[in-house]
Amino acid sequence: MKKTCAMIVAAGNSSRMNFPKPLLQWQEQPLLEYQINQLTMLPFSEIIVVLGHKADTIINQVSIVDSRVSLLNCQTYQEGLSSSLKFGLEYATEKHDAVLLMPVDLPLIQLKTIKQVFEAGAILLNRIGEPFAIQPRYEFQKGHPVFIGNFQGLNWSDLHGDIGAKPQIRQLKNREFIDTNDIGVIFDIDTPQDYQKALSIYTRKTGNAKN
Image 1 (tube, rainbow, N blue to C red):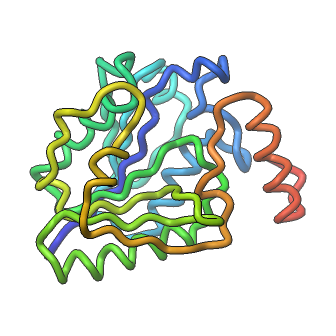
Image 2: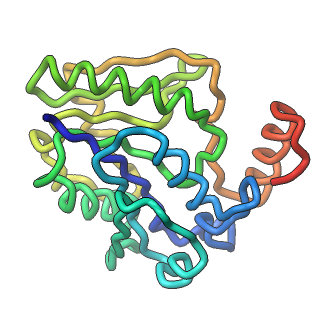
């Protein structure tokens, strides 16, 4: 049976936020804890969290109860997102056939969107043996989470800086998009202003005044 892991990349130094983004409060819990809890609702074989900046502080403030969660500490996180991503993928490559990539700083992504991407990826994973990607779009803008199937067949060694997996994904001949009305797939938090706007959007959509 083919296995799919989820990977939350949460290693950055949050320089524009001036506060660790994994510890931002979201729905009365740290943002990283919220994202982990979202992913535990789906049948991933493992939920990998790649930490780096202030890893010990984050671990001490985030409650994890699901045994599928693995915390990794990337010592080279200062080299950029690509370094943290490669670190996580190297860990995952021997145990999993596919990975769902989820940056920590997109709190507005709806669970139904994650489920839709996961299920579409799982179906395709059983059909083809070549690398492929499934990605949601909002108003034709590509977003997250990204499902990458048969990811062991890709060369990740050329990744550098903060570009993430975009170059590898763009080169895939097997690439599908899921159009959605979920603005969360493209709304990431980089600054305090982004955070306040995200809280405002969440409150407007749910009528919940708490973060």
